[in-house]
Length: 234
Ligand SMILES: NC(=O)c1ccc[n+]([C@@H]2O[C@H](COP(=O)([O-])OP(=O)(O)OC[C@H]3O[C@@H](n4cnc5c(N)ncnc54)[C@H](OP(=O)(O)O)[C@@H]3O)[C@@H](O)[C@H]2O)c1
Image (cartoon, rainbow, N blue to C red):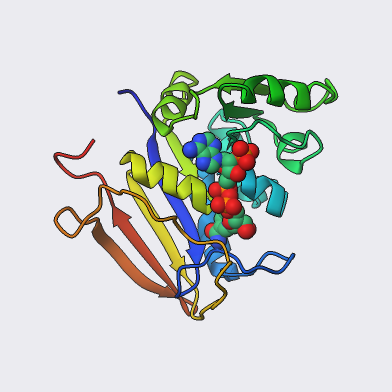
C-alpha cells in the first residue's frame, strides 16, 4: 500500500488525558513544545484531526512561524499544510476556522450517508475560501482508505493531531510510523476528560512493543518519541 510516512503527535497529562472537561482547552504544552510542533508541522505535507477536535477547539492548524512558512514557500510548497478532517456523520461546521484559513485547502473524509451530509453542510461556503473536497473513505471511513487517498494527492508526510478517537483509529490500524508524546507534569483526574486512546485492539503489545527512540525534558514536559514501524508489522 502506497501511503504517507505518518506521525502521530499528542500532548497529554500523566494520567493520559488530552483535555479536561471545562469549556476552555487545557494547556498541556509549553512554548518550547509548541515551537517544536510547529517545526514538525512545517516538515509535513498534510495535517489530520477528527471532527470532535474541530467542534471542541475550532483549530486553524496553520504553521505559526513566518520563518517556517517562508522556508516552505522557498521550497515551492504551500505556506501551510493540506488539512484533513475525519467524520463518520459528515456534520461539519462550514464556518469553522479549519475551512477558512490556510492556503492549501482541506479534505473531509467521511462515508455512507456522511458524504451527502458533509456536501450539504459545506455547500454554503464562499467561493473565495481555500478549496474543500468531500471524499468517501468507506462506511465507516478507514485509516487505510484515507492514507491511500492522501498518497494519491502527493502527500508523503502526514501529521495526525488528535483527538482520542482518531488516535484510536490510526494506532489501531497499525499504519502509524512514529509517535511523539508530550507528557505534562500533572494529572487531570476527571473520569470524563478526553483520553489519549479508547479501549481497543492495538498491534503494540508486550510481545510487539513500540521502540522508544528518544526521551528528554523540554522545560518540564517529557517528550517521548517512539518508532512504530518494525519488521513484520504493516
Ligand atoms: N492534547 C492534544 O494533543 C489534543 C489534540 C487534539 C485534540 N485534543 C482534544 O481532544 C478532544 C476531542 O477528542 P475526541 O476523541 O472527542 O474527538 P476526535 O478524535 O477529534 O474526533 C472524533 C470524531 O471523529 C469521527 N470518528 C470517530 N471514529 C471514527 C471512525 N472510525 N471513522 C470515521 N470517523 C470517526 C466522529 O465524527 P462525527 O461525530 O462527525 O461522526 C467522532 O465524533 C478535545 O477535547 C480536544 O481538545 C487534544
